[in-house]
Length: 288
Image 1 (cartoon, rainbow, N blue to C red):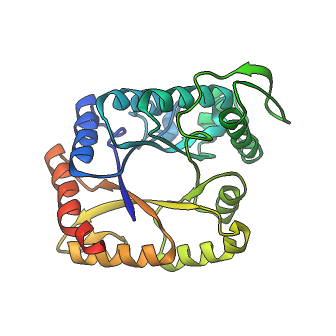
Image 2 (image 1 turned 120 degrees about the horizontal axis):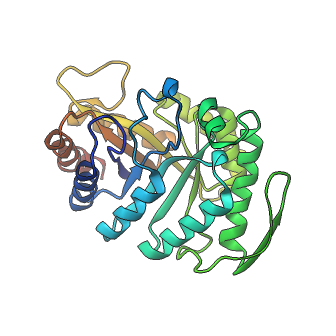
């Protein structure tokens, strides 16, 4: 089982230094990956939580130059409100510059106002998501000169160079908690990226699509919140003692989860780094 850190890239108190310090601490403590969150143009009505946010691809580029080993992920890019040809070029470049460390989790988003602000149709975003995933695959696997003709996206003889370092391009995971998102992941991607769900719900969902996978590699990466506490919240997984959290992770691993990426329930940078260090020193050794 692998573990990543969701960086504090959004919220009223986040700064360049809090992002950078958390990324460097995650790499120093031995986490496998760091993750940024994506929004571009939320309307005020939807912006209470994500209004102050560092743009995802720009931030990952900055962090690629500041780190050496750790994988670089987006959780999750709202793909249908961007041009997939531009995204494909940006992430191919970032993969080349970072030495092949990029992972893309992509979802359809939830803010109709953000789609309107960016000039994209909110109501057909699922269909455009499917085609945009095909665009990324075509770009990253199709050689140096690439054409694509679909319902929503078309281009001819595009030169994509340099290509990604990773063969076939960065891994693509589909984000979302619904059965539709999971099936989209099975049909078009390398993995599924849900938020925290009860362990039996994860197990049941994966069992429902296992015949479609035909034993091919398929990564399940869950996003969660981590809180060390003497008074664990009964309805919040990964809240409690190191022993309790390790036991929960064992159950999720047995249900089919391969990767968990955590944000720490912390108010200060010191609390955040202590949370990460405690996990690596007291939780992870119980899982080996």
